[in-house]
Length: 92
Image (cartoon, rainbow, N blue to C red):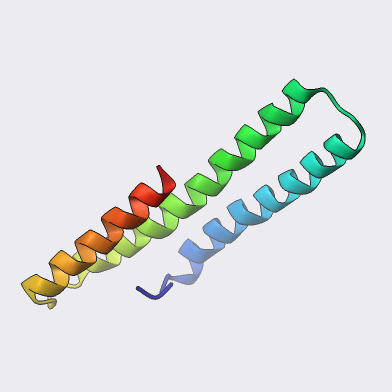
């Protein structure tokens, strides 16, 4: 499955990933500065959720495109369903 998303859909995912990238840089600084463990873990949890949301957005968009493509043969649909399920589970 190719990452074939409309520009506006991709923009939202990229914004989430850039925000997560900034959070990760902040976490690194926190660790280097010897910040409280609880604060570091809280930030790690936040960045983990941001990454999960970006992944789910990509998968949901792929699912939407698959559903819109009614021309697929039944076998192709089953194969795509299995691939999407595997992707969802990889984020679980």
